[in-house]
Length: 196
Image (cartoon, rainbow, N blue to C red; front, side):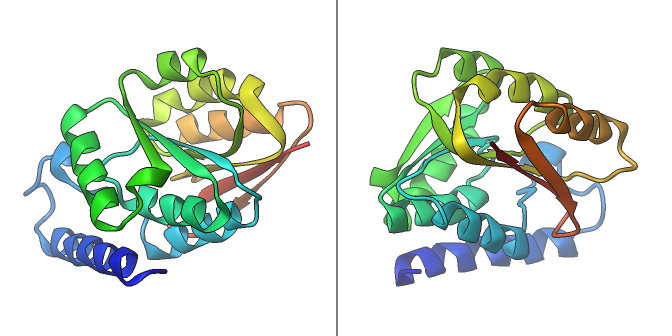
């Protein structure tokens, strides 16, 4: 990691600590960072770096924390990150943080409805991070599966067996022909899948 990337991650980590110190309900959900956290970020970076010049798709930019980890992997491998967010304000914040980290040339920001944007994509994809509203996991999965390259890795965040919407996603991803998948107790829970 470059010093610029480390400095931006340190900024996000301070914000995560500050938010966790706030009384529950004191911040509107949409104002919260809702970041994957350092352990998950590091795993995402390791997995994405294992691919050669990958096209990385992040579905759910939010304020850009996981995009720094994925953008760093894109920079290190000669790949690129396409990150999608419905909120123009969040996307703009994430773009500014990517610029500060020296990653701007490796990251493309797209704003709008995720399912519609995925359906309109021309690119094929080598890595996907799925981290948006949970009722959109399966529709996004259905949209991006036809765009996956052989060997693509798909990571879904916040996967816990007791959450029915996420259990529905786990059943759906595991039923994709050629997909191998496992739930990992990392961060808030991850479903990590590999296509063919």
